[in-house]
Image 1 (tube, rainbow, N blue to C red):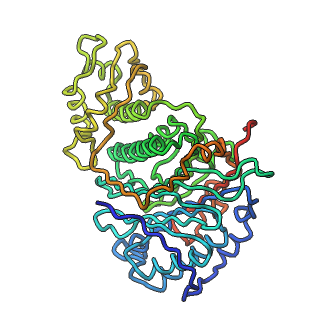
Image 2: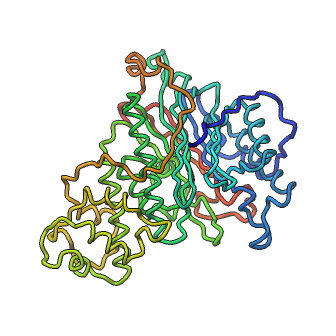
Image 3: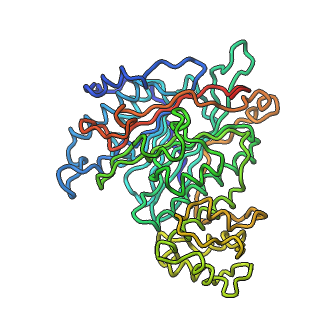
Length: 467
């Protein structure tokens, strides 16, 4: 069983004084540090690069071997985050295996007015997630752990929050409830890992929907934060878009799906720069496609892409599964054979397992008239065209290995009708920014040393009828 989230509420002064670097001083003056009005909620997500992973000099040398180096860098990170004073801070690659570093963050955040919640990755990986929530502005009504128990040992944190500060003047609406997720998806070492990442997102959304139904939170907006280890060109991005989520940074800057080159947020261990850190918003009024339908389309998109990469045309693919060219239901054996041929079955740890194939099969129909012989790149929308529009949602979900625990029972007065009637209709994205500012131009500055990721901050206001 997974352990309950740990909340730290200490207000004692920290024994260490964080060092203020030049880069932190420049951050204080940047546009992302502007003072937000009381009616706003701001969220910062940041992969802080655990010292056990940060390379120094060569492949075998890690920053964790040099106390002064990792302590100074993390003290600067704390300075940057506390100067910004976001309402919520979501950190990934938090080094939970080092008690001194945990104490440094929890005491510093505690003195700055935050409660902290941490969750370790499974299999004693050494790092995990830490979420800090401003106790003066936000109440944590419930929190939940999700452990994927897959090959990446990744985890996610769920929060049901109530913003105490009034969102509107003249006491029209007293508070806003929202659901928040902090996560860090698997790194895509090769294309097969895309299926694992899709599965991780599916589980997150499945649990969110379960929670909303159980506690009557259909009107609560949802915010997803973290390192998604995938760009705007990937299937995870398209999957989230199909579920009504909006990238806050892209929305604030009026970027579309073709503007992936406009900004970056990460320089990975291969030296590539890319945009992988997102804050996603979904308001309750968005019309959503069935969750299992979207997942099936995304998985099928990957399968078809791999087949086309192998040199097969649409006619070839059709011939593999429909020798007579008739519109028939694809059999489980046929689909398993296709997946096995492309290295996507459970013989590999990162592959689809039988239960997931069964879920896919429950909704998958192939119509010969919908398969088009095309040399164009196979993307998610094309994969969606070969799924029957009458797909029924699966009630089975994905792997049964996920573990969830509740930190506390929700207060009974939170979910009564009078509280729900006061809930705001949703959130509007007010602003979003990345630091350092060069990354907003698609560049990675060599003098930036806080992490190999850029912190992303988004601010929100109550949504009005004109939004």
